[in-house]
Image 1 (cartoon, rainbow, N blue to C red):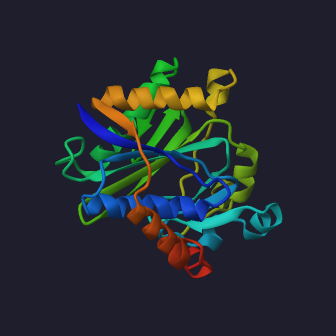
Image 2: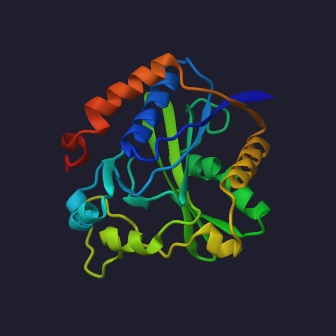
Image 3: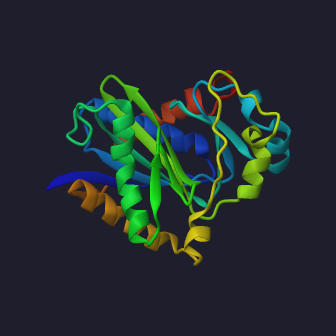
Length: 255
C-alpha cells in the first residue's frame, strides 16, 4: 500500500506562515524529497485573497482593521475566503504524474482530489454534491471550496471545510455578499453557504472529525497516512517565503 505523509501542523494566529508552509511542501515535492502529503491546519480570523484578485474589490479593509482580521494573499487562484477557527483547512500536495491524477485535466483533478471529502460527508449521513471547479454543496449550500497551484509538474490542492465558522462576520467582511459587488477580472463567487454543524445538527468534536477525514482519505485512495514532520529544508524554505513574501504588504496588497 502506498504511503503518504500526514502533517497536522498549524499556526492559527499566523495565516502567512500557514501559506508559506504549503508552498514549501510543494517545493519539496518538486525536488522529490518527500512523500505525497496531506496536511490539516487552521487559520484564526483572516481573509485569504486569490492570487490574481484586487483586494479593494473583494475585502472591506476598514472592517478588517477594526476587527483585527488578517489579510494574506495566497499563491493559488480563485476567490477570496474568510476563515476562522471554525474552518478546517486541508492541503494535498503531489505531482501531476501521480496515479490519482495522471492524465486528468484540471477540472477532473479537482473532482478526484475532493472525492475523499465527499465520501467522509456521506459517511456522516449527508448528501454532498460536487460543483466545479472545486466546491462541495450540501442541500444547495457550499460547505467546502478549494483551489490549486500548479508549478513545474507539482500540484498543490488546498481547501477548507466550514465546520462552525462565523458566517455572519464572513458576509460583512467579503464584498461578494453585497448587492453592488462587481468584482474584478477574477471575481469571487457568491453562493449560499452552510456550516457542517448546522447540517448535522449536533456538536462536532474536531479531533473526531479529523479521524473520519483521515479514514476516508485512506479508504478512497488506498493509501496509508504516516504521521510526519517538515524536513529541515521545508522549514528553511517556509521561513524564507514568510519573510520575503507572505508577511509583506508588497505581496499581500500587490493588487
